[in-house]
Length: 77
Image (cartoon, rainbow, N blue to C red; front, side):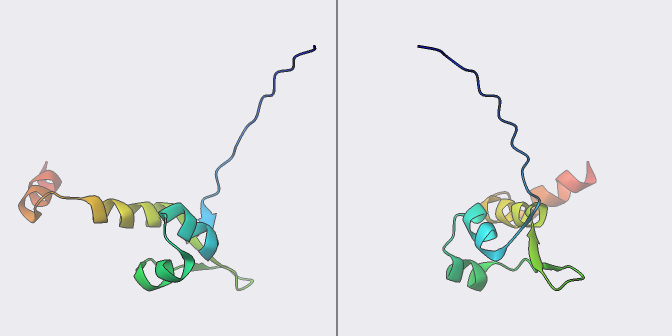
């Protein structure tokens, strides 16, 4: 039997539709719209897309268990 090597290059998208953004955040679509404070970016043609960087910042903030004092100290260096 012959063998083959498959080389796949995946280019991640930065701007996501609402459904893709909900999936990225691990939330059902309706819950995502209700819970997510991140505003979508509006393109010239009217398309709305969520920036992955903004979504990740929001998610990071949800799981950040450090105190306000720790955050201030971290910012001061």
